Length: 230
Image (cartoon, rainbow, N blue to C red):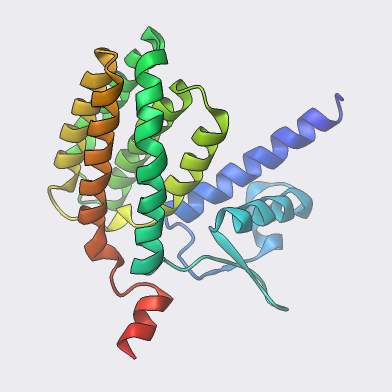
């Protein structure tokens, strides 16, 4: 048992490191993922890198090409993007409703702090470095809510969905961060009031508006959009 735990911790660490590079566009969509290079950069053997890439393929963030190894997944086209938000709209309002009945003071403080951090950087979100900080706090806000709901499978599924969505957030337009903060505040207010219906409703509204805000960055980026223009 003592031999398995450190190996699992290493595999998780490598997975998270590569996932973050993909979401942040440090590795651009469609770029080749060289196992040897990644292992050298992360100072690990190739084995945990291979395991991480297999997990990322299952998450849809990497693709395995015949006789060519792995590559970062291309950005989704509008059809896949719509399906992604369809799933989030089914699950995430339910998670917020569950959280309203279960969230503790520690999580409420963490949500408050996370929103405060988002507000600190929202004015400078035009730069990629600043926007990455905003995106990180945004993901953390949603993760805290999902985890507070007490359904581990739901929380893990939503985390994977959000990784896809955040691939687009580096293309945010001016003003989007302000709207995101206002909507998060409404969700947080519902959680403070322990109002499950309001938490679900405000989360649903937030997701629908986020989908509309991100849609202009999606159109024309994916293979299905390229086909439609041919």
